[in-house]
Each structure stands twice: as structure tokens, then as C-alpha cells.
Length: 260
Image (cartoon, rainbow, N blue to C red; front, side, top):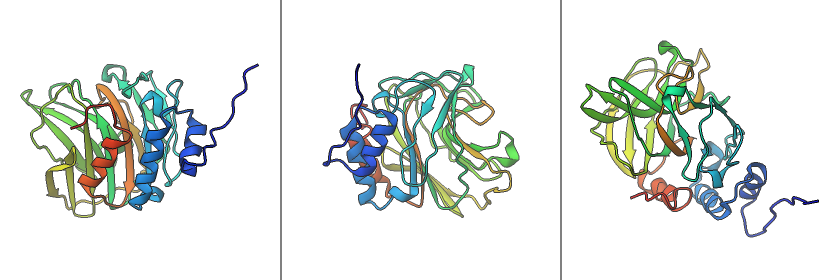
């Protein structure tokens, strides 16, 4: 008979130990350093994220365990996205996604992710993190990518009850990148690998009446699906320094992915 004992190292943060024991994650050092770093920035109680590399979460099955002090919002893998060493890989053609029970419609907010984008269909967009009910009037915000006119791939972020996107020039590649989207009551901005690449005013209002939920890898109805691996997705209630937070991601949960 093989017995399983909880991880109890006193040198690890208590929340890191709790997450490791719940999820079964084996990349303990990266998780511990990430949590300690987030706490040092004063963001832990306002953050929830989903580490999606197999060594940083369950690595198998249909549950993607959440990490952070904002609350427990474990995700459910829908239609078979695939666990892997570099993250969960999604196929848009199969309407693959991770669903959560988190409704997040509060300013200011930060959506962040580490991804590799392999394909965005022409005249379409692909959601990394999407907060919506599946109906356009009730869509609030998303972090993802857009391919317009078949010639230009752009980082894509929109907010509130109408499409109000940020579309800086963005070339798809075989590399992983980190993305940070910051949205407040009047402006929003998008950063790639710690450097801001777009910002604008939006002048719109978050829709709270429909209780939209957070989905990873597609919109709630499976549309606007993502193609490729997502290593990490998360949300913070508040604001961050793009460069500081990017460095934390790169040196902890993003280690080994070749982030610039």
C-alpha cells in the first residue's frame, strides 16, 4: 500500500503549501516564489489565477485549480483541451475552453496571461480570458487576439457593452509572450512582455446586470476560440506595474518558456 502525505515544508509559504496539496502541482519552487512575489507587491488578496502548465496544476483530469486570495474559482475543462508541460493547449474548432464560476465586473482590473498563439482565423478573434454571457450586449472585457483583413494580426482587448478594442500591430510567432491588460473606468491599456503597446480612452460602462462569467480559451458559448497553449491566465482587482509584474511572471511561473 502506497501512502500519500501532504506537503508540509516550513520553508514554503502557507498558501503555496495549500495550493500544492490541493492541486498536486510538482513545480513547488516556482509556485512558492510566485506567491511570495505577489504578496510582496500587495496583490495576493485581490488576485485569482490559473497556472495551466501540467507541473503547476493537476496536470490531468478536468479540473484546473485556481490560485490566489480573491477566492476559490476552480475551472472545468470543456471539450477536451490538452494538458502539457508548457500549458493547456486549446483547439478553436472543438470549442474547447475552461469555464469558471467567477463573475468579475469591477474597476480597476488587470487580466494577465502567458501564451503562444499558433493561429487566429481571418476576420475573427481568439479569446485568452473572456468575461461575458455569450451575447454581445452583455460582453464586458476580454484579452485576446484579432486577425482583420487577413493581413494583420493584432493584440486585441475590448471592454464594456460595445467593442472598443486596442489593436496594435502584432505578429504571431512560435514564442511565448506575457500579456497584461489593464482596464479602469475611463481608459484601458495593453502590454506585451512588460512594455505597453497600446492605450486608449473608452468611455463605456461595465454591464453588471447579466452576471457574465470568466472563461479561458474562448467566449462562454465556445465561439472566438483560442488555438495554442495557455500557460497562465489570471485576474487582479486593482492595478500593477507592467514591468515589475512581468518580471515576476517571467522568473517564476513562466520560467523555461523562453519569455524575452
